[in-house]
Length: 234
Image 1 (spheres, rainbow, N blue to C red):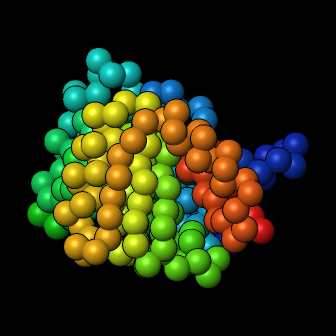
Image 2: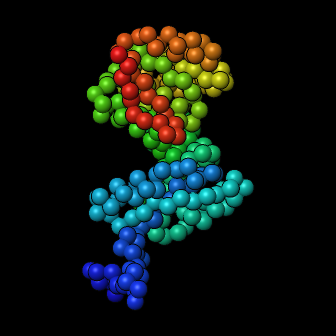
C-alpha cells in the first residue's frame, strides 16, 4: 500500500518514486533512432500538470521488427497511445482502424490513440501544431502569401494544415520535384479556388530565400529538430 510520503532506506535515500505506479497509463514514442526525441519529457510534464497518472516513454524499434513489435504493443492493455517519429509516419498508417482528415490527405500519421472496443484512431499533428504556433503569436494565415521549403513528412503535414486555413497563395519547394508536385495536388484539394499553389525546384527557393532577407514584415518558421517558433523579420 502506498503512503503519502515515500519510504526511505537506512541511508536516507527514497526507495520508491512517486511518478509511476501500477495504475500509470503508458504512451510510447516509436522511432529509429530515438535518442534525439524530446517528447517524453515534455509530454510527461504536461500529463503531470493536468493531474494525469501517465507517462510517455521512448521505444526504439528497428525497421525489420516494426510490424511484429507494433502488433504486440497494441495488445498491451495499459498502453493508451503511440507517437511515431522517423522513419515510421507512413508505415504506421496500416496500424489505424480510422484516420483523421489530415492523415487521409497526407497518407501518414504521427499519433495513434486507443478507442473503445479495441479500435485505434490515427492522425498527424505536425501541421496543426505549426498553424497553432502562428496563431499563438498572432499571425493569421488566411489571405497570406506563403513559401514552404520541404515537402517530406512534416512538410507535407504543414502544407495540408495551412491549406485548411485558406492562404492567398503558397510556393512549394523540395529537392525532389515529384514530391513537391504530389504535395501541390494534396493541398490544392483543400483550399478555395482563388488560392494558388506552385511547385518548383530548390535552387529557385534558395534565390528567393536570399531575396527575402531584404523583405520587411517577413515571418519565418523552422520545422525540425531544434527548431523554434515563428520569428518575425522586420
